[in-house]
Length: 173
Image 1 (cartoon, rainbow, N blue to C red):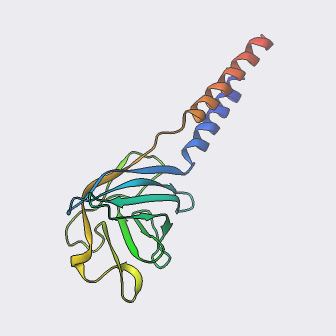
Image 2 (image 1 turned 180 degrees about the vertical axis):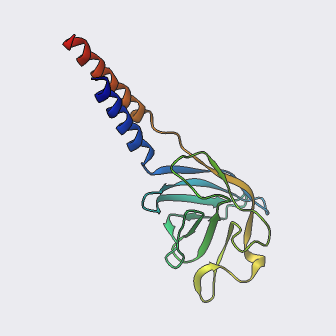
Image 3 (image 1 turned 90 degrees about the vertical axis):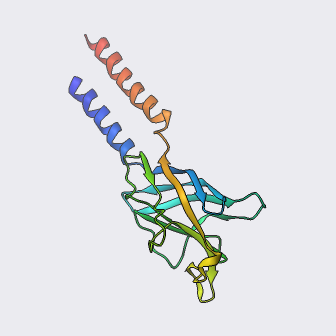
């Protein structure tokens, strides 16, 4: 019976670890004083982003909401290119690849790096990235993304399963 309980708990913990992870922007600021907040979900098993909801904003009210992956740019484990439907582009680049393990991952803020985290208007040749007129782009100077902890429901489910196994064991003794 102990082996059955142990196997069930091991299965539950593996299933929880393989679930997509929700990432939240943390302390993202641009060189011009603007900020970004929001979240997205990343599934390492399928290398897919979903549930994107990121907003950039400033004191003058200017801002853009991003809710989709950029259709002309591939999203990979260390880059998330998003757009607002064709007017603005926001490319989030991560220092390390996102994983199912969670934690915190810094945004790439190295000035002049080709994959620096940047927001800008789409170029005249379509929205394949920020405008070539770099004066119109916003560069991120600090920030990271952090994984949201595993929901309490997952731990509750594992505890309930262990409790049921314990009760069953008591009944058979």
